[in-house]
Length: 125
Image (cartoon, rainbow, N blue to C red; front, side, top):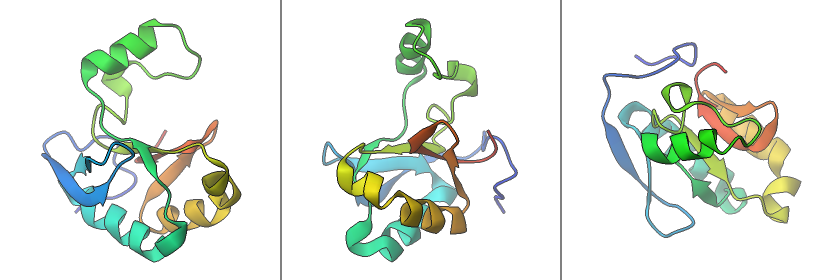
């Protein structure tokens, strides 16, 4: 069983969710996180956020990290690369509903990044 205290779910495959992201592609996360993610999105109903980004390749994360942008994790420590993170769209609806979004995702083990209101991860920062 997976618990939020676990850092990385190394031996678990990546699966596609029935939820589509901003690009109309299935959100991809670790297999054990899909039911939690989908349950949270269902509970949020019409307040469910648009998912902007989910899994990233090692190369994509490395380019972002190498760019020097503040707050970008190195690829070997990135929850996005591990399939354990997603970013919600930074639109006004999501921002105005962030307390509810945070509360619901938290129930399912996802934590909001303390410095990025749009970033949610499963595991400890």
